[in-house]
Image 1 (cartoon, helix red, strand yellow):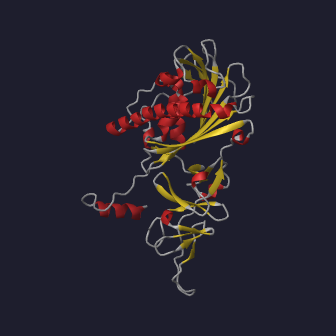
Image 2: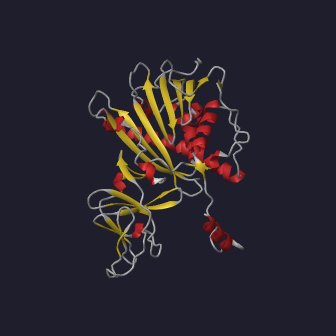
Image 3: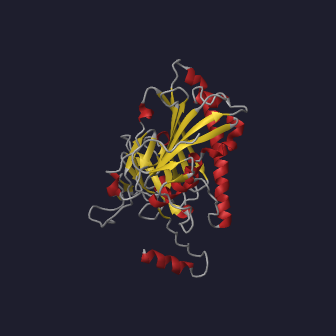
Length: 394
């Protein structure tokens, strides 16, 4: 059953019956290779789970090749600094937290949470000091994660964190995920939006028929709605428990709404005859390396509690096992896509699904070029001079 889009203001509405979107561009010919586009740093990105950043301790983190030292002061406040001492470049993540400052392990230079040098212990008051310390990143803590703003710090105050009311709702319980995936972040956006890949999960969900009801897109987002029906085959018990009885028979149907709103993704599943989602998923993919071919996937699965107290607690291990298996299968596929890109040196996809062509345009338009790193000295003839020239011109 095909419908023409679905209600909503703004954006391009797809006519699913014809497979075309009014006003949309033709596929990728001549477009910049999306796998060479980096994430826009002017958003809030998680770089650590809150529970991994203990009071009075420091740990290493990374964003797109930028090494960070994330620490929690004695007050409980989190901070993030460039992970290098301004003195000898030794990583500050090897250092020691004292009060609200981070002290380098080598010569004990101390840094405030904003990156300014607070003490060089072997200098007298009248001695000259470096005018600058290291870069300090704006930090916020929410949803059990430590977020940093790696872009223009002046934009941090006017850029909102994602709104996730279900996370704080007493009617929901949240399962948190944090996994490294060896692929460009765009492969994960495509994977979640393109529900035609359910054959990949046939061993855990049986035979699922996804019917795209419609989608809409604008400059920063793509949102799609699918009707899922179970068409046979054995289904993992965790799938039924997660969907609160959804996807449970040949005459059942569940509506999934999936949205990429740059740079985040959400998925809501509403079982047949239900008024509210059985669960809501929020996800973001944070690049780790400078080439952005490896990312950290953070996810929050907010599950509505059933009417019977304790039922979700009993079901929790089965749901966790199911979601981990689905994620493992998805990771296998997207990492295989990345390997193909690495081997071919370019994107040779023959994509035919208009929805995915549109989300690629959203990711391109909102992303930034990946900056090539200067070659290390000794890597090849003339590399030192070329690297120094690159740094000087930058």
